[in-house]
Image (cartoon, rainbow, N blue to C red; front, top):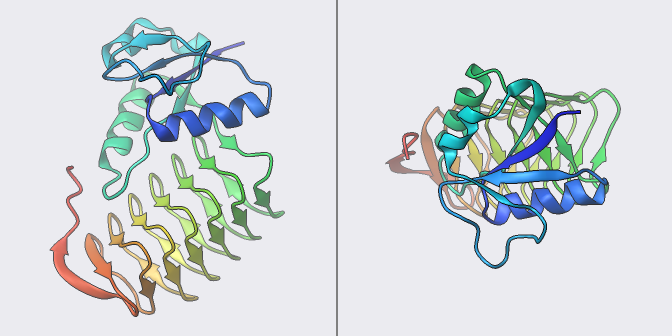
Length: 216
């Protein structure tokens, strides 16, 4: 069997380790720019910086995407795409206490955290994060590399573009389209479509005049 190796050593990676251990899955080690701090779970060795990935055999290694993010998902996107180009596959991680309805499509490398709810007809594309307690109602489409932060609530038939970040506690009404790489700031309420790259804040949400830095 392929060994599980986690990319990243911060808080998001630690949450994923806890989920994998709850499912009795062994993590062989982590790869990150710097060695983990004292909060890193015991028994999971630091394998080295990102360059170490090139020394591993994709046929015997399955990766876990351990990078989180609070604004831009570009770093997660780049890391995922480089690893895929090198022939690696990603583990899909779903917490045992997430509620996933029938007829939900979950693509490779997605992570769904504790208390999340994903209702029927939804599609979660590759490398998506549905974080703790987030709610995604029926028939939503979440584009690759997007991050739905803790406590966010998407009503039915919402479309979230690739790389978008839906902040903590955001509410999105039904039928809204959120463009690629958009940022919805924590606690805002989206009541109309959001252009690609836009940054929105407030209740109801309004453009801030700032474009999300997708290269950050």
